[in-house]
Image (tube, rainbow, N blue to C red):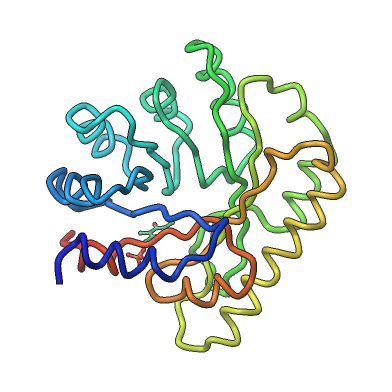
Length: 222
Ligand SMILES: *Cc1c(COP(=O)(O)O)cnc(C)c1O
């Protein structure tokens, strides 16, 4: 099946209020253009250099989301144009994004990546570390970033109950922090969870942004 058909099939499953990030990492610009021509505007990339090359050649109304682990020394390259940085996992990174965004007079929306999976290797704040960062309140002085919600990745498993449990945990944290720290901020609204193999579970657990790659573009060749 082709990219446009795959895209429409995924979109048909999404209820109102859930948006699709088409994860185009490791796929060529032509693949993105195909999805673009079918109306898709939000694309997710995980490598700064690969993104920079695509961004230069593709239409300006694409909303680029950075979904990978971002090193602080790479922030400056994406700060001029990035629409959402999805995987902020330290205060240090948030502060650096703020500093670079200021240079372009921008406010960059960011999601806090929370470690919800059983696996050791994934990035992200622990829930406790994130709560402490929010309580400390230093982030409130960062005028050039806007914390727009949370992001997480479930354990890579066939155990659907485990995945549902992890997504549920992330949604609960979102609700807790919404009430405690962002009650007056309608822009704190995103719960980014769900990938090709588990976005249907995410849909039942309160996701607002699903990040789907393989199911649209096919297997990645690394
Ligand atoms: C690669 C990636 C995805 C997409 O994964 P698929 O299984 O191809 O849908 C989603 N989220 C993140 C953070 C990723 O790195």
